[in-house]
Amino acid sequence: VGLKAAAAKLGAGAFAISARATRRPVDLPDRGERVPAGRLILTVGVLAEELQEQGQSPIVPVVTFHASAASAGRLASTRAAWEAAKTQPAAAPLVAVAERRGFDVPAACVSLASFVLNAAGAPR
Image (tube, rainbow, N blue to C red; front, side, top):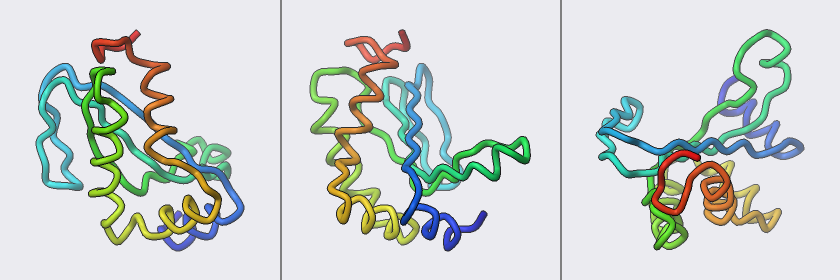
């Protein structure tokens, strides 16, 4: 599924968000960036059920960014990271649909992070 197909699915489909904390530095090859330990790596994409039916991951990742994993300042850090990430050309369809639907991407990311991470930013 390409980005155009993902954008079309997003119009009628669902957002997909994944979160993971880094315990040691991690490379993000698609961004050419090294993420330090103690960060929360967030990927926002689109749910594509036909991929799951084919035995593949059902998420089409669109944009990846990172923020503070510690709960103190997590929302502010995530909002700032999202503001920077949403300027990526691939993020345009996500941003348009999120704004049209009133979907607060950073708040959703922080909600997910609060579910999977403790206050110190470590996995539960």
